[in-house]
Structure formats: C-alpha cells, structure tokens
Length: 364
Image (cartoon, rainbow, N blue to C red; front, side, top):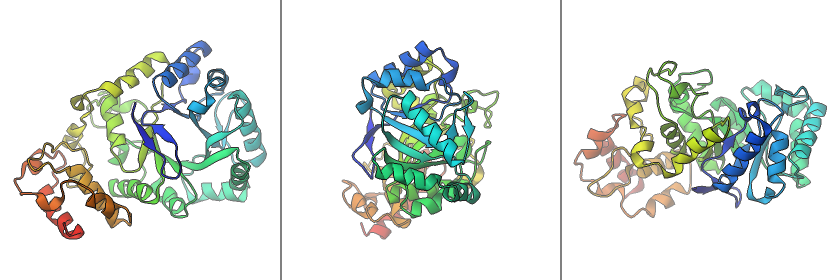
C-alpha cells in the first residue's frame, strides 16, 4: 500500500480508502470481515457517509481493537435516525447524529469532521446560519474533531472555502466522465475542475475522491457515457494522478469487491494506463496535459508529467512549485525537441512547445 501525507498534518493516508455507502446491503458479519481485511491490507482511511445506518455497529466492533490505526471521515449533516441516510441542516438533529455515530463507532474522536454536501452558496449559508459550522469548530477546539473538511460536487462552491484556509480535506467527485462534463455530478467544465485540483494542492488541502467509477457506469460499456468500459484500475489511477489527491474511496459491497480493489496495489503500469480515454475525450480537453505520462519514456529522461504539474501549480500561485521544479534532476531546458512525446500523447498536447515555455518560465 502506498501512503500520502496530509499537507496540514502528519497523517500518512493510504491512497486507496473505502467508501461505505454500499456496505449496508451486506450482512453484518460480511461488513466486519470486509473492514478487518481492508485494515490488514494497509487501508487506513474510511468514509462514513453510508446509505444506511447498518455499517456503523460492525465498524465499531472492528475498530475497538485498532482505532489508532485508521482515520474516519464523518459527515456533519448525514442523518440516520430513520435507519436510512438523510441530509439535514438542523443543528439539534446533527448533534444527535454525531453522538449516535460516535457511540456506534466506539470512539470518542473524529479524525476528519466534514461539512456535508455543500453544492451551492445557499447550502453553506444554511450550515453557517444554523450553527452547524460553529458546532464543528467547537468540537475541534475540544479535541473531538482533529481536522475539518468539506464534501462537494461543485468547484464554484469549493473554491472560496479553500481560499479561506478553513479546511484541511476536500471530498470531491473525480472520474473521466465528470471531468469531461458527462454525468449527473459533472459540475464545472474540464478547466474549472482542473483549476480546483491545482488550488487544493497549492493551498495544502488534500482531496479524498468519491465516485471514481461514476456509480459503476464507467465500468460497463452498455451504460458508459463513452460507449466503452474502463477498468477499476484505470479509474483509480486517473484520480490518483490529479493534483492534490491523497486517497480514492471506491464504494465496496463486501469482501469480493474489496479484494478486486486491492489488486490495484500490485497492478502493472499497463493495467493502470488510462491513456485510451484520450481517444474519446471531448475536443475541448485536447491539448491539456493530465500528467498521465503515457508519453514516456523520454530519451532525455524528462519526467514530462511532473514538469507540467509543477509549471501549472506555479502559475496558480503555489510558491513551493518552483522549488520542487528546481530539485528535478532533469529540467525542461534539456528537451531536444525530438517529438517522441508529441507522437504518443493521447490528448494531443504539444509537449515540445510546452517544454520551451516551461524552461523560459523557470529559467532552466
């Protein structure tokens, strides 16, 4: 298992986490077995926004002996009083829900307390005016909440909050369909969504990824918006390559789904390669580097994807990007314009011209 450090903390977070939304359909023994197996495999990040109340007690029984090994993402606004998921902005209901979740999970603290499902300015106003945000801050001051985060599907709703330095983690939906403006939660165009990823990395806000398979649509050619199926490993790698992403949280229904996901850790580069999406991506995203490094190997040993990433980050105000670039063993100025990368780029990026621009920008 690979781990990535939370920028505003010391937590080392597994790049593969678990989304709990679908686990409620399994028997409690299956839920326990799935969570325990995930922890044994090195997964340490779990999102607790479930479709039902059912997974919480099994989680608690597993975590009672290993709570310090994992990080829980708990949502202030997810309500389970009926036994099924509900969304609420009523402060008293939120308090009862959080107290219930803590009891069920057999814990007295929350690693990541999330402002839940903010997709518009009006949503945020309800949380602030209703006192939920203040309650979350009080819980943080009391040491019950370690970090504050937010979940959203909308770049325009997330961007102002990130600029306020109010959160340490953002839960956002990332997959090729949404990024290319296809799907129910495909809010924001490709440029706006990529700008959000860069903003998160520049501000030190980690991203936990929801809906990496677009609720399974991308995995089935019959319902895929592209008319072609992708694999789980392609979707996971696609999300992990985006700036700011710390962990991807695929939903699992039980041990079989988990074992399939865990295969990603030992998958080959070819199995993870998602460059074929360049053949059916919309025309408006052509010419945009997505850091997939399908252009490799470079005869001059340039890490083309990383060079592009540092350049894009520097241009949106990341003050450390230039320092990261300066530490690269091989820089853009060493490009010999052979055109190998251009001929292999599935997104038709003119990397030869980009290397010249980047070398001029950084002065090397």
